[in-house]
Length: 356
Image (cartoon, rainbow, N blue to C red; front, side, top):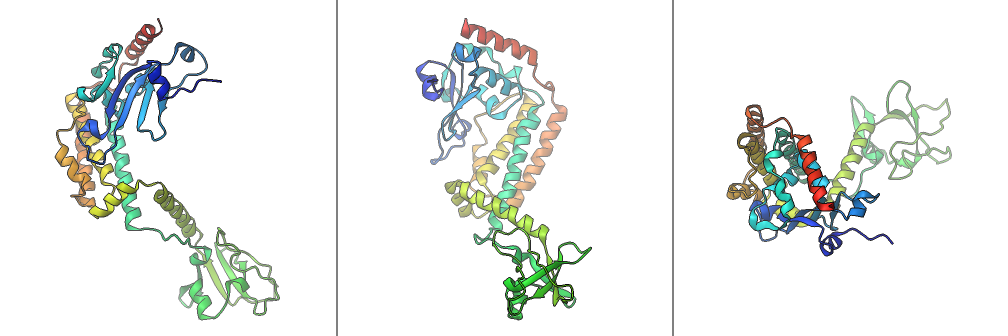
């Protein structure tokens, strides 16, 4: 049976080249409830590397511990991946182990203008997440799902009346309604009513999970008692929002959510804190050519995590910060991208040493 390549196997077989404490504890942004995240680099047994069993990374179930194969590590560095670049400047007291082979990897060989898009782009993603969470927290969706009937309206004088109200007002049942398409009028139907349930009309819907109204066979000499319009586009959007909202409720981190509820600002304050950290780091890389993992602006960033700013204020501040990153990009002396040929030669040198 094939050996499973997991973190325990890496440790037992001395395959780890780098192991660091990462995340909030490396950033100097940890709080008493912070987890300990571990990231690092490994190399594969020679047979695995040369054979069919190449494995680019290994993680535990919660993804709190992640190790990258050395080739994958250098590839991500070349792409200026924020989480990977940060490992090169991990504070010394957060480095649990480092092979001298990795001393060949120099931060300056990887920093480039691409950091604007990797650090800044990731920060923009966090802003979108914050906006999305704000929408979810301000506009929760009821667990009882609406149906097509809730998006159906009866023409009423110069306006319209929700179908539910119309049924109640006229003491009618949706199951006795027959609907027929009105030609050239999208999602508009003639309404017929089976008063003694002898005509076999299908009703407006059979199941609450229906995605459209039902049509019935109606005799040509029958006259509609009114007309119905089904807001299909509105119902499709509602179903999408409903699904996204309740997926989010199911998967959300409850402790973080409760913290967001407590500060009452209706945004994910931890995400917003990391948004500003990334934007500040992007500006520092572009203007100074340095990566500062350990944050001396801890107090300012923790104010964001603690919800001391209003949501709209933070969005305005983030927009201003993005403009500063763009300016730093325009003025930066960094290369457009890393020297991939030089890095490839470095990888060959490291692997040659490992598999000699």
